[in-house]
Structure formats: C-alpha cells, structure tokens
Image (cartoon, rainbow, N blue to C red; front, side, top):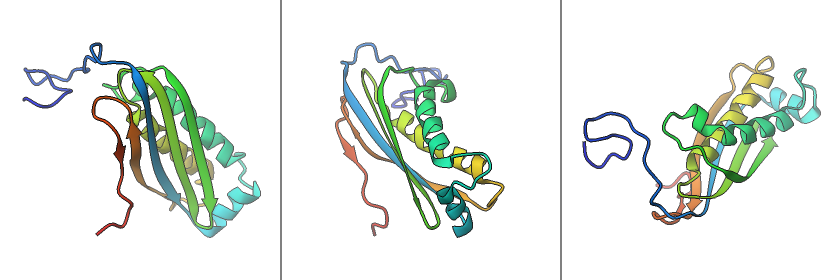
Length: 161
C-alpha cells in the first residue's frame, strides 16, 4: 500500500511523522451552511430560541472544536492553535459559517477549520431543533489553505460547470 500517508507498509493505520518538516505559518479557511425554515431563522434573529443565543453559542462551540480536533479525528496531530475566527451569517433561510484557523507548526490546520464549521452548524441544529427538525447541514468544504510544503490552495467557486 504505497502512497497512502496514514497507512504503513503492513496496511495498518499510523499517524504521519511530521518531525522533519519545517515549522511555517499555516492557515486554512472552511465554510458550510445550515438551511432552515424562515420561521426558525426569524426566531434566531429575534433571540426567541428558548436555549439562548444560537449564534453566540455556535461560535464558541466551533472555536472549542477547532482546538480539540485531534481528540475527535484519530490520526490528526494535536496542534498549538494561534487563532480561530468563526463568522456566522444569518439570512432568511439559514446560517452560513466560515472558519479560519492559524498556527505556526509542521502540519496544516485544514481539519481544524472543517471541524470548527461542522461543530458550529451542529450546535445551531441542536439549539434550534425544536423549531425545525428539517434543517439540513451541507456544503462543508475547504475554501483555502496556505503554508507548508504543498503550497497554497484556493477552492473553485461552487456552481462551476
């Protein structure tokens, strides 16, 4: 099984050894969205959700999740996170989440950004599920990453042919 970084020569899972890699500034941005009924979105906007401030709690949950990614994803390295921003934008039928995570380390923070977005959106679902059980989480993806040996990456816009 050659070419797979998380599989050893015998086919067993392993954590990649990054000790020989240079520490560089690394950043990753991910996004996702939860769609919901207009009534649920309006209740969130009005602060009328019984569990509290959905946006504030989801933001804190996402930031906490970024810091705990290696506890959730088995082969992720624990990283010293230098910064996490998590923007949640409410519109008439949902919330868009965008997370940016930064570190200076020997491996990237793509998984941390993706985890931040996903957990933030799951928190929205948990807090607002009494209002709309048909909410749907989707479009979670890496938008950009910089730093490291593999260089920079920017996702193509959605809806490309």
